[in-house]
Length: 114
Image 1 (cartoon, rainbow, N blue to C red):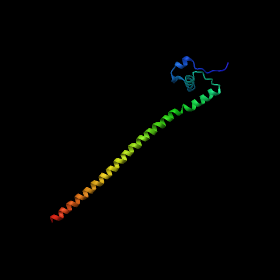
Image 2: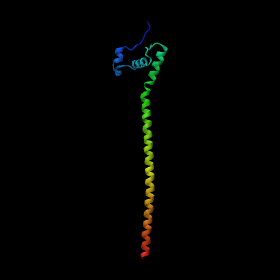
Image 3: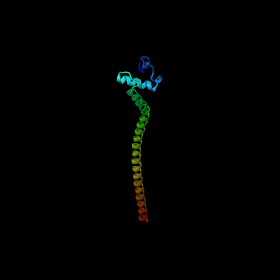
Image 4: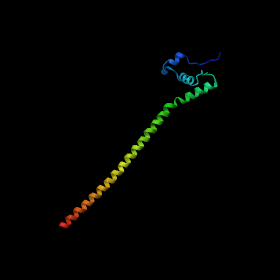
């Protein structure tokens, strides 16, 4: 009689929070294959090792994707801010030029009235 780690019907119906990672992987594997997984077989061991390596990576990958999306939005916002600063600098140059022209005009009017 070989040891067969089959997940019982009542264990499948319980909440996933109460299950161990090993049991959750078995449930997923059985639902995909529709056959029981033997923990002592090479396929069962390989699947368990793959599951134990992949499961911790899922939250890490999600965080990396979230950070990439945040970075992309921040880069686009910074680009908009840089354009705004450039436009403000141009407007400041125009304002100073107009101010100098007005000053020159007032000096010319002063000398003509003398």
